[in-house]
Image (cartoon, rainbow, N blue to C red; front, side, top):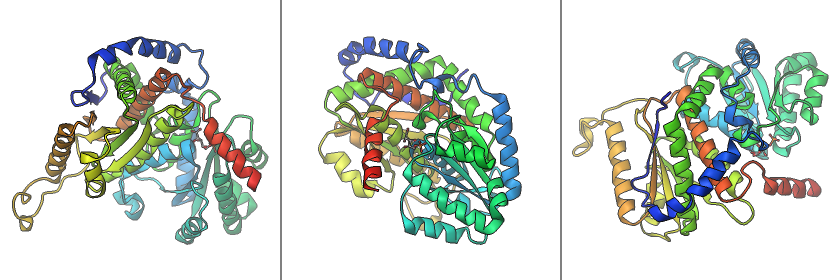
Length: 422
Ligand code: PA5
């Protein structure tokens, strides 16, 4: 099956000899990833061997959430947060929560996010915003012990109990956590929360295609299977998987040539959290043992007016990966009052001219560029494809650097140091 993603390597200026030298590493990385012997590689086939009973349970829970509340607070951090937020913003738009339910496509509850920081101000403001709306809470933590979501969950639980009583609160809490370990699992079982499992063989940042990402989005009105369909299409598209490997090779060629930073760039504000998701995926997967490409992101054209100078003319320590939305979600025409050359042009065409112009200017300055084009309108299916493409490329690239893509010893270390201080 053909997916809708294409990678253009023509502006990456890769040294063919250096790329050829890495083919053996790519082959070994592929063998490892698909061997079935590596821990935490369950995400590779999660879309294909989908658990239909679990998906049905998610749909039923989502329908129940819709009858219970107008706002679902999704509590989680890192891999237990970014995928759902990225999808919600990309699919429901930058102003999803401000638009009336009937205007949003598709109809579902509004999603709010908590537990991704330790800010009293943020959580107080959130509780204020939610004061006059019925709420449910979806708490997501694989370990069940992470400080940030534990704090937010405790605050929100208090709020639920105050409003709905102990029993009512328990009926409004949905937990996504480990099958048998952790405080959250114990609490969910003891209190009868509706709960879903983060599979043992899938780590945080690779868990979007499990209830971690799919349950909140089901409540927001999206069908979980559509994301899985997209991931499966990507998996079955031999040419796309080939391109994922070539992208992994290209990244490593540039890294070996001293390009230590990858800047992800998108020209649509609704891609902002997808860039955040990418940063976590690549940063936590590759950044270890003194190695790794530092992932950064910029929102264009906004950041051209702050970072454009550096990109064009600053230290040549980076390469760029452009995320191109080929079918804009909406179209507007610039009114006549804007004058030439803008008047009468479609915004999509102006945005495209910016993308092409910036790419050409940066290329002239010697910056290597990858262009990842999404050729169909953004939908849950295309989102699933994007997730699967980047997860595959990232895992292969990390293996090629000879690091484990699936652990995060550095994250564990700071958590331990912080706990000591508490
Ligand atoms: O990718 C990861 O594993 C991490 O970013 C975790 O998702 C994050 O630390 C949250 O962990 P948990 O789901 O255990 O609360």
